[in-house]
Length: 236
Image (cartoon, rainbow, N blue to C red; front, top):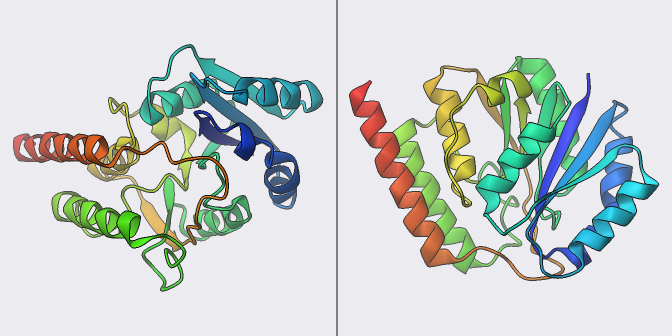
């Protein structure tokens, strides 16, 4: 088994500097072969320089890039195409879902045989306790909307912290450009009747840099995706 860990980056120079002390030790502790693929999505700081240096130092690290800033969805699709692993895990580059929690995703997959395991901050009181209300409440509303459209099998449609069976993930038709990509992936797994499950996960506050999420733009994208999914459900 090879695990591909994909982290999309846009202007994450300071966050990428944490990989040596936090990301790689957490992955080493898993005791399985892995590769790390970081996608530089058109950064204009020195993210690319930090990633190039890591790639020179580590054989298990790949730095790939989109020439322009295309959005989270495009960055993830670039990472999916570059992955060599049987399984793909996705993380935020700022490590707000700490990689030490990957063990829970892997253990749950072994126990359940699921093709997608989601880390949900909504399954425990401490899951999103460190996140400000201005981010937490819109997230609850959007995830409630997707539960209404796609079903209540999942509590968390929007977080990036997940484990996927690669062959299933690559079989999906994915179109989203922004943060809504995670909701689209979850909806596609469910529509294909693939086994999915969740584990509790803790989402922490960002320690470096600034969030790339534009609330009004992303809410519009989430709404547009929800309408598209509803139309597809009615047709089929």
